[in-house]
Amino acid sequence: MAEAVPVRCPACLRENGYTAPVFPCACGSPVHPPLDLAAPPVPLTHRTWTDTWVTVRCTTCGRESEWPHPELGCGGCGTVVLIPVHPPEGTGTPAGPAGVRAGSPSAAARPDPGGPGGPGGSGGGAVGGGPAHIPPPPSAPVPRPAFRPVTIRTARDAVATAALYLRWLGFRDVRQPDGRPIPAATVDLRAPGLVAQVDPTTAPAGLRAVECVWLNGLTASATSVYFALAGYTEEARARADDLGIPLFVMDLTGMPQPVNDPADALVGPDA
Image 1 (cartoon, one colour):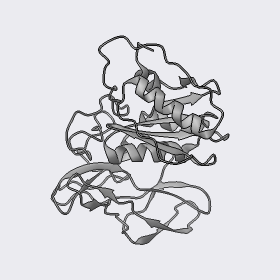
Image 2 (spheres, helix red, strand yellow; image 1 turned 90 degrees about the vertical axis):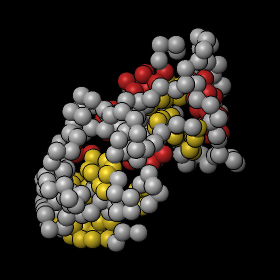
Image 3 (cartoon, rainbow, N blue to C red; image 1 turned 135 degrees about the vertical axis):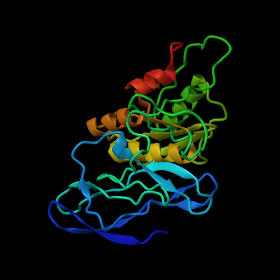
Image 4 (cartoon, rainbow, N blue to C red; image 1 turned 180 degrees about the vertical axis):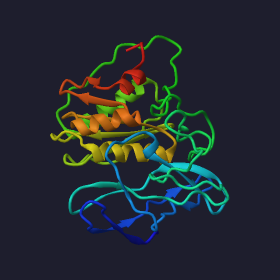
């Protein structure tokens, strides 16, 4: 596990402890961004798709992958900073002010997490500065029948409804966790090529929840989907749009409704 390092906030000069995240390379070895602590952290005033990614080389197999750029929220003033990262050795190109290697894919052509250099190591990339394309679920040979909702009375009903809806979309072998869901906790659903999270609580899902399901999908090279009973905060919806995460809201009748463009694209014209 990477050790915590001190990072000084450029706004209030408070020293914060930061531990670089560790990600799994396609070869199975752990990798983490090599922080450039000699360079000052850069305040993040406007988030762009380029800021989201940084190139990291695996020291075991030499594979270069795109991973989330290290960032830290100051515990004193709340300023969010990007922590510079050393470029892969041998590239001969310095890291930019946000730690993005010059010459690496930018917002105009950022690779898909499952594309070349991504954790999956194969496939296409995103084009046009938007998030990576959401892969559609397996297509059905016949027109999709109408979804039959199930009334939601408990947290378990919410999880079961989300699982039924994902199967209706065409995902196979959707796995539900064993045991009764805890009302105050989110629940994971998994299927081949899919990572979904169901929030049966009465509070809107926030920014951290959306980013967590995105990271889970990124690690598994899978589509990330979120279901919530109480909707989403504005920050969560904006972040989901940036990352291309489909968001659904469920009412007590048990009918999930898409609430952003990635969700509409996932449902498709047969809904």
